[in-house]
Amino acid sequence: MEITVHRGDDCTLLNNSQPYKWKVRNPKGGEATMPSVCFLVPPTNKEAVESVTELDGGLKKMFVLWQRLHVDMKSLLSWQYLMRDIQHISSWNFFMVEEYRLALKNLELHYQNFMKDSPDSEMFGADDRLQAENGFQWPGSTKTILVQSLEQGHVPGGAENLSGEQDETLCKTYMSQIRDLRLRLESCENRTVSRLRHPVDKEPLQACTQRASDQKQVQIELESIKKDLGKVATQTESVLASPQASGSMPLLRSELDATLKKMDHVYSLSSVYIDKLKTIDVVIRSTQEAEEGLKKFEGQLRNVNKVPAEEKEVKAHLSQLKKLCEDADKEQATFERLDQELQKAAAVHDRMRSVHSERDAELEHYRSLITNMQERWQAVSAQIDLRQRELDNLAHQMKLYRDSYDWLITWAADAKQRQEKSCAAPIRGASMLKDQLAQEKKLLQEIEKNKDKVDECQKYAKSYIDAVKDYELQLVTYKALGEPLASPAKKSKMDSVSDNIIQEYVNLRTRYSELLTLMSQYIIFITDTQRRLEDEEVSYTWRSSFSRSNSNTAPGLK
Image (cartoon, rainbow, N blue to C red):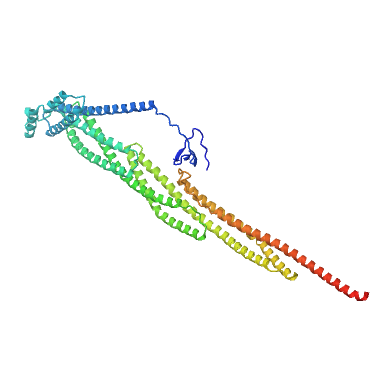
């Protein structure tokens, strides 16, 4: 192969073991050995290096800033929760003991979170942490007395009915609890939606299993939130049913209804998403199973690199295709099951669309993947059927050609042997030569008569070659569809049979032409020889007669 490398061309260096000849590959995939080439390596781009160094330094500064802001935001959130609890407890009056206990529990939790997050924050110093500690401990004795009094059933002041101020406090307390539950709900929703939007991983089965496990934890958390929300809703309804109206009651009612609606929405979304992950898990497993079987069939079809040249080879190929067809009929059930599982996943997706309107990219990915696999499977089935038909036609054309060729080549050998035997016979007089000439003319007539059979064999050879080329084209085309990006050097070569057929027929035609030419020339030779012998015999007879007549007239002259 010759390739031309111009100034500025890019080539891939494959081998430079020889000092003066290097092996390279041009962009079109051609490989050749050529004289060594000098490559100019440009100097280091200082501006680029400086830019990358600046970018790296900026990235590190940004990462440090992000860490500091993250710590500050966590500390600020803990501080706000703690201050809210302190303000809430500071406004306590005599109402239900359970509310006290829940508020105290939240206070302790938020206090511990703040003390854990604030040491690394630049927003809060030692004075802030001391203030938080004092607020947490205030007023310990008052809280203890209130709780003990409530547990013993003593309500100072004889307050059997809640005053308007107490109702307002209850409303604010329940509103705070409802908002906390709503924040937890939104956290669960955000995690669920984040998993919904997660792109398809390189290891989809493992990723799907992990997401299903994580979502089950979210579902357990939602069960707990639903239980707590049910309790708070019952207590809130009792306050809202109080005859004494409070200014916060409409807002409390709105918060409760919105949170209950949010609870139903997030719980339904999580439940449907778990069902979706189950169906996708089945789809992934079935897809991998179908892909493995599909690659096995495609590999068997692509690994055919030779057209059968003998009848037994054709039978062997047909037997392999028949077995492959039977295996394909069994494998068809896998693709039918895969289609059914995809429909189930689509049905779950429709349920999810009623809860969450975003498009499911994962389902679209597997729908596209399965559609592509089904097209490839249809191509495999079509290729098997096509090869069976092509091989049947090839076998038919092979038989016609082989029968004609084998008979003609045998006849040509026999005619050649008879012709050589006739030529080797000694010439013993004109009569014998006449018989030999008759035999040669009969053989020539036989040769000329078989010219139609030689032409018919040529027609069979052409049909056979066309069938071979059609089958080769099917093999090469299907192989090229599976190896579109492979370089020409890596693609497997197809062993052609048509050249052998052409050579066979050319050989037959040559032998026939030689036989016809030699026989025609030999007949001409025999004819000339016969004519010469006849002329000699006539001359001899004439001389003999002339000699006898002279001998008879000689005595009379005397």
